[in-house]
Length: 259
Ligand code: 13P
Image (cartoon, rainbow, N blue to C red; front, side, top):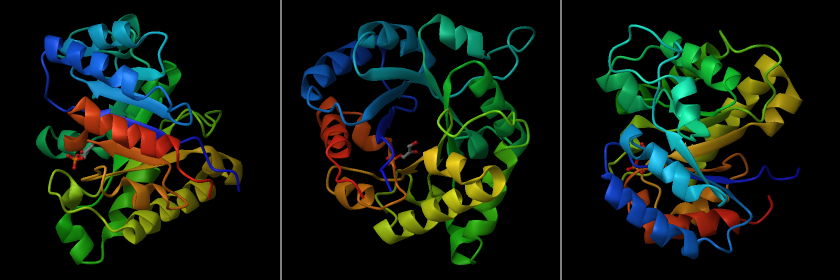
């Protein structure tokens, strides 16, 4: 089967001032000139989003937000809407990152409403799912992940095709810990997610959806993770903060062998 087009995505989390963001983009662009084989996204704090979108316009790099709220305007102090993201040039949004779910109390329902709004706004959602260490150790990985994936489809229109949505399997125990899932674990979870997408929306949909792995991805392990049949890219925190190391990951994703 033809391989889906890989994506390498940086999630800066709550890091970088505008000046640092500018410097990063300047360092990144010349290092990824040969990376035409992959889509590249950089998910940055709201404060740097307009600047990063402006600096990456006309380049292979897409600027994205790490969160937003699904209402378009109104009395929602502190929130940012999909039209506001479009207004500053964002093209993608992370939805339901485990840090949003765990620290800020986002529920499956909120994640589902957000995913639907992102798609209807014409932005690309990267929907994160993943289990905790306790859930994995007690054999509950698939129960958790399948529930999270099913929930996303609650508000998503039937007409949504496979390409406008990306999933990221990010086991919580592998995030920021240096404790990467084995390539086999990553393949096991991503293939199960694809199987479930097939049940929910049919094989064409499932075959087109790109599923990323996230959790301590770095230049030293990206090759074996990307080599897995159902892993279509990476969502990277720590190793994306330096332009040089993120460029290595991008180039690895762009050069992945067809599987
Ligand atoms: P790390 O790459 O730092 O483990 O973070 C992964 C992540 O949460 C990406 O969204």
